[in-house]
Length: 205
Image 1: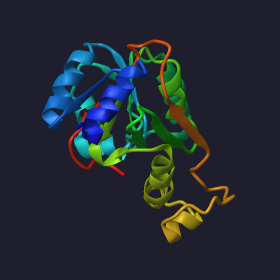
Image 2: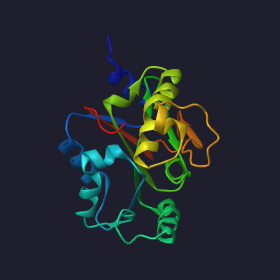
Image 3: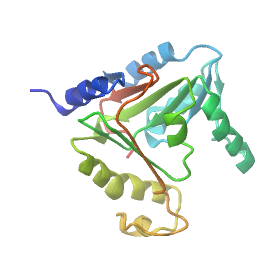
Image 4: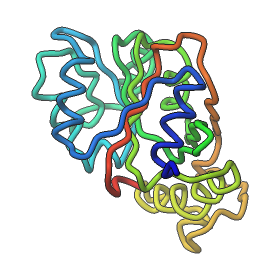
């Protein structure tokens, strides 16, 4: 009988989304070595998964043009330019909030700068996901985002929202809320564009 990881990879492939499973971060970086060419322009979305795995450090050490928005001197205007340039990248890398055994990719975004280039623009997209993000159903995906991913991200960002205090989404109308743009990817037009890389372990939330 297939476990949830095997079911998810099989379902993703049936949905025309290539997927691979890796045991270690080193396997992940070896895969990224082959996916990202020298001099490529590479963008990223905000992701605690990428941060925990050391992906940002890896990119800074590659011979590429990394659209790095995390420096100390990056202004609001600089960030907006990076967000717009992300659509032109050779490779865009992001995390996943929840991934179902039916091969559906769930993401939630505050300003849309992460989900928009995942859906359209960059030549290639790498979505990196720890096995802690795997769930069986759409309902479990929504619940995972409402009860874990969104509240913890609101806390990390210092948002003044009810979920940052209660730890659970209450469908607030706060101007500070980060639950603005849901995306559900259940297939793709270009079968080689979005690739899902599942890594064993608990990374991000």
